[in-house]
Amino acid sequence: MVGVPLTAMGLCPVSFPFQVVQLPRLPEVKKKWLFPASCSFFFLLSVVMTGCFLWQYHLPKLKTSSLGPEVTSAPVRMCPRHPEPVPLTHPLPVLKEALGKVDRILRQALSAPGLAAMSAVVIHNDTVLWTGNFGKKNGSDPASGPPNEYTMYRISSISKIFPVLMLYRLWEEGIVASLDDPLERYASTFTINNPLGLASAPAQSLMDGLEEVGPAPRPSPVTLRRMASQLSGLPRRLRSTSLLWRGSTQEALSLLKDDVLVADPGTRCHYSTLAFSLLAHVLAAHTAEGDYQRWISENVLEPLGLADTGFDLTPLVRARLAAGFYGSGRPAPLYDLGWYRPSGQMYSTPADLAKLAMVLLGSGPHWLLRPDAAKTLLAPLLACSGAYFANETGTPWEFHAQRGYRVVRKDGDLDGYAATFSLVPPLRLGFVLLLAGPRPPGRDLVAQAYDVLLPAVERALREAAPSPAPPPSARPFAGYFTFANQTFYEVRPGPAGELRLRQFGPRVEALVPAAFRTLALRHLRGRVFQLHVARQFPCALPLGDAWLSLEAQHGQLVNFYPLDRHGLSPGFDVPGLNTYRVLRLQRKPVFKTQ
Image (cartoon, rainbow, N blue to C red; front, side):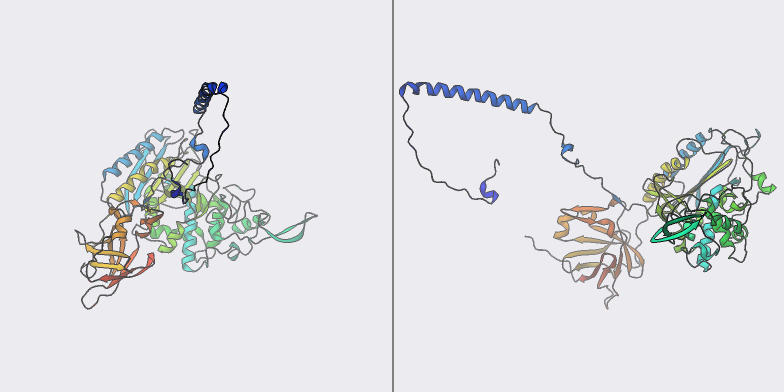
């Protein structure tokens, strides 16, 4: 080891005793050749060593990555991940530019084969930001005008939203005891074979004259929630039926007795039109109306003002429908789905679906579900395998990951029509796309639109973030505080009267960058404030071998103590950080320098 003294390695130099040995004298005749011979030897040795060095130098060098994973600095994760969905003042240049790009994306797509008309709506909070209408309402009529936001389209599987809304309302009303109730509780004759759910105990059964020995079926219930989220394991449709089947619910239950589940319930995403239709008809039998369509009309469509949404393709409705076409350009028939109506029969308009989006985002003048139920409705239930067309599934949604957000979608495709209803709840953003014709080939139009909309809305919200609300008076809370004489805080009013909490002291100043020592205190009510880090910030700061989590501090509640006889709060707690008894100091502390 070169350049390291032994003492630096924790070792002491050792003196070894030595003895002088007298060498025998060489004869004079040989002594005169000793010096030239030794010079020749060392010269040859130096040549050999130089050659070895040059050979070693020119050998291929081992790449650093071959010694192990290459060390790269990880990108800094910024927080808060999603901006606060505050009201926006329109028009905003960043949104105007983004909406112009969405317009161009959709306009260019209109050249796809068979696509005759297209309408789209962008919603934020309780506002329609933009509507786009392209093509002709009737592609077969050269004199036809363009569609508008009141043009009707068949919405196909977007219809599946409504049986789920029915389920949640009946749950709130107590008619459904639990979302996780088995279907048998509401349809006593329901049964289906589940060969994929097995118990450990063996059993014997006799079937078709053949003795079958194997494990007994394990109860793995087809629950209401699983039926509403593509997790029931039920087949896509009833055996030997088409979407035009006109049987009854009792006939459907009879057909299922000899059928099998295609997946063990709750374990795999599997698309089932059957599940939603069966759910709707079974639940309707437990309502006063006794009929699914009547219940939806009276409890959802009418209260929400969805006057242009329904099931029956009357002559008046047909006159207002955009004409649907196949990819070949041939007009598509307007057939009736019969028993499968709850899964795909409905029609609607861009304006009505915009109203529905506002309701589900909790932004419009109407409400349908209580906040806790609405939050459950929009939550994912299970991550799907790569073979499924979505990342996650929910009731009744498909969730697609895009630009750090979960895009909540329901897509539908029916002869001559295609439709997408989508939401991004953290941004209070919605996008509806209705097509008279098949979806254009290539990259999904909705994904293209969100690639433009998500960063634009996020930027607009971050720039519009309001300043923290000030309290009626700053005096009761201003001053110096300490936690166990280890950390110190100053609370003082800012330029607009809002309170700011500054951490200080030798320990903090040595570890925490100055830009992150001060947090705003947003007044909520009474003596309760909320810690707020302005703009975006690193989620965590490295402090030597440890990390300071700014993400954990952002949004925490600060509860000041009741005022004393001087009108001052003697201290505060931050329960979310497990920090209690941060007590007031009489004066600013003075620290001794080392």
